[in-house]
Image 1 (cartoon, one colour):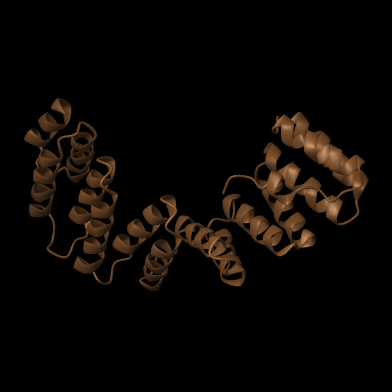
Image 2: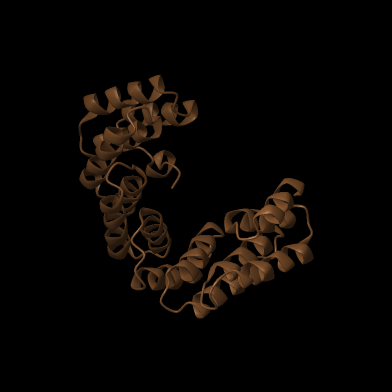
Amino acid sequence: MAMLRERLRVNGSDLVARKLLVRVLALTGDLGAARSEVKELAEHLPANDPSPAIELGHALELSHRYDEALAAYDEAASVAPTSPDGPREGGLRSARWGEAEEARSRLEEALRRGARDAETWHALGLVRLHLGDYDAAEQAYRAGAAAAPGAAESWLGLASVAIARGDAGQALAAYDEVVARRPRFGAAQLGRAWALMRLGRRDDAARALDRAEELGAAPAIVARQRAALTGGEEGDAHSIRPPR
């Protein structure tokens, strides 16, 4: 705090430092001081800039006042009705809190306002998947994959959609895309093993399990998948889904 305050004494227009000070103050539990810094931040910005309300939301979130934080993100959306930043922030946070309905409407609004980043698309895919809207989830994940072609996260989401549908072929294709981007991700090999078993390609499934074990995948899950393979079963899809 002392370093940031000295920085702001020398250069009061350093908005990055001021935003960071808001968060540090919130982390120390001094929400009143954080609110004062938010007001000071607003003095350096246009009236329709969503940043002060977003920073207040961060401070409230760090203080575990989640309903108030969401209200602040919604205020940011209202203050700047053409900016995606407010609804995007509220949507991402709601998704992280497990509030799928709250997240969906805000993320879709952010996209209507022009957000096109992979994180927003991925979060929207996740909440749509949780809500059982598989077609819409797939559409969001594919948009996320297009927005970040080198990232694996949206392909993991597409694998989860395929598993939810029971479509082993699509799951395998998605996990192959994950492996192409993250060759040492053992959970993807577990997913491949499940899909290959469902497709009747048991030798390929065994090789995928060997690779998963080599890469340090969870031993208990590897053992369950091996038991399913040797017992002629299809395996447990829920046991191989990687974190989303």
